[in-house]
Figure 1 (cartoon, rainbow, N blue to C red):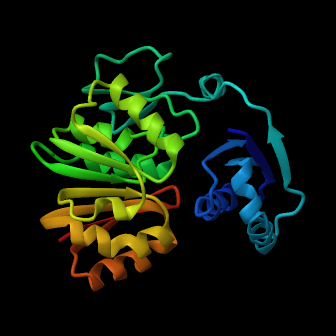
Figure 2: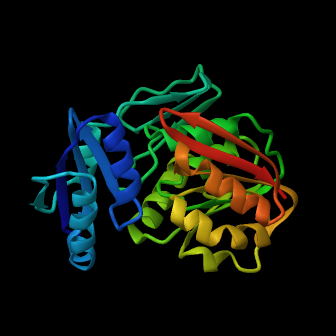
Length: 275
């Protein structure tokens, strides 16, 4: 698959975070930062349909001089290997690549080769959800990881005792990457990758649902999450900025969810609620 790299010169870290959130609602699959330059990656064939929207978005934030660079087919594993450092969450879980040294001293040593899929633990939203998972005993529970990317959150959930986690993502690249990562971590018998959107969970029942996507999709699909959540089950959402907390909390309350609490990290947020 051929990709285009969009190079954006940002004013500061806050503008970079906002642009990641906004572009994440379009078909961009990955983001990296080098100093004040934000690099966003998108399949070339998918850029055709949204380039005008991207240009208008950048213009609305006062961004000028952004460059679209066509990337020749390459070894994405090698690219990630040069940029991906291990991440430690709550001091008890490390998320690392296969080429990093193992950490047998920690309770949870998670191995992820992200390729172009979202979910290495580096992004604050992934850390926010991973922290909530590590706080819970999920023994014997059935869960859903919606917008699963690399599958890292589903993997952590089964390592915390979940009996089964469906890992759903609309992107075929993410689906294949999740399959590789669950095999690498020895949890292929308990994590089930599913290629599709929210319609894929119709008729399924869960004790907990993880949804680290973006504001618009969370608001549009929350009713379907609630329909698949058992009474007493938890919905843990992220992929949003702090300013989006009221919108998600209000939507959750309107759907009958309660015990609504939020957590923040570097301008990003997660919202947790119960049915």
